[in-house]
Image (tube, rainbow, N blue to C red; front, side, top):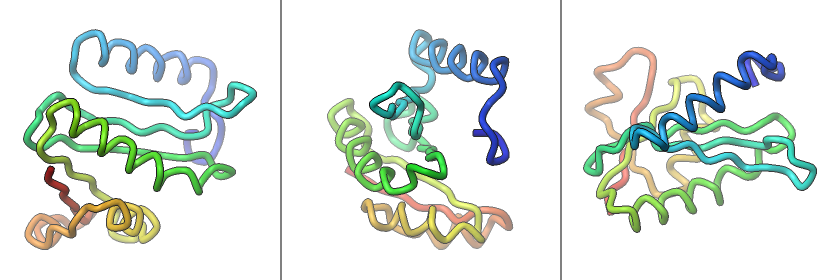
Length: 127
């Protein structure tokens, strides 16, 4: 989704190429959640190979908002097994749903980072 609308074919191809390249070059790791009919329902990623403190990101289509808690928990387990010792997420200050998701899945609010940023609140988790 881009601005609440489906990706154009060109944007979708770019997104898939970015994901493929990230895995190939060991730079970032995108996971897609697919519906039974093959549509993309959601996406979650680890944005870097830095095992001590990598950022996660996520989105879900409007009709699949309820899938992110379990997806985030699964990503945390996978990251731990892969050797990550810490992850962080950020949510726009007005995006309370995203903040609640991070807290629900074990992230802790990072007051210092959040107070130093006008746009985002930061959350951390350590294994």
